[in-house]
Image (tube, rainbow, N blue to C red; front, side, top):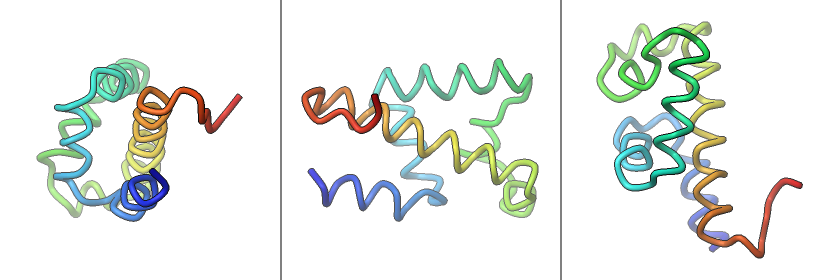
Length: 87
């Protein structure tokens, strides 16, 4: 389990890993969609298919990294509910 968590957090900026979370876990998809709605910006589209130079700009990179981190945490908590990371 720890290896999986470390892998996820070390690979935050790889588009395929981020998109895999979105495609394979409902809880992650809901997190991405919630952020898109809150920011009134299709951040997930930028993260999955956008121009890397745009994504690397601070105003997009910071919310993208945070969103990916929390989505990964959501998945960990669903897959291992007895090992909650945050209370």
